[in-house]
Image (cartoon, rainbow, N blue to C red; front, side, top):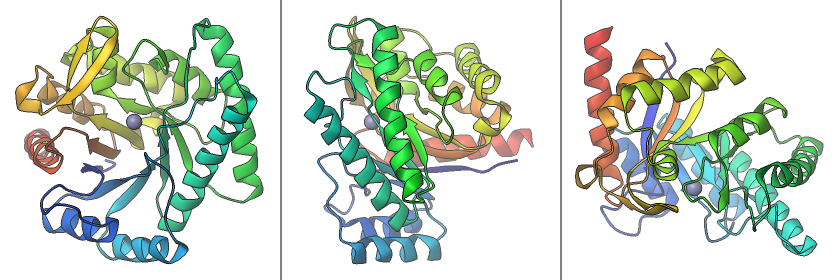
Length: 280
Ligand SMILES: [Zn+2]
């Protein structure tokens, strides 16, 4: 069975203000085993730091992924904003590659009032240019458009499965909190199994063996996601999700995005390990 790793979005909060290198060390100290490096405000990292990160993570067996800047919209009205979005994505992939990270997670686009089918074609076109550039640079990395939580954002499960099945090296970042917020449902064992079965059907079993997952408690309105919550303060049925992940033998990375980061990451890890040991 493929291993499922548990970690945090950015360095753990306690102690405060850890660098990425110290964050990786802290992840290892507290028994977690992956970290998503947050470039959400921009990709600013020297080559030296990236190489140091790569060594520290490899020595401690910590798997890394990267979250690209929030300021990406492959469906922007102005061409220059689209090109700037492509640059941010490429910069994220270059930095991820130097850090030894295997995945780049990103928010692909906003609908900007256009229908899904039209936005899909636009996003795909500009996304393929990014993939082309990365392959020219011989950067081999999983690009992970994220399942998004707001109705204004491109990124339903189906849109991303279509995109992934039509492009090599692409699989969604399955954000179960976002999907819950966006749909107002998808918060039960049966529904979580439905999502996983759909991923398997569209992308094959290998996609389940190497997933990139986001989990958090979440508050939402009829327009979708409002904000993240700690799991204990939300109604998110994380035990049912973990049971589904275990039953589908899911491997890869599970990143916790609750405000209390490492506390919920460890809660998820412990709950999963207990389930897993009981069933194996
Ligand atoms: Zn995200």
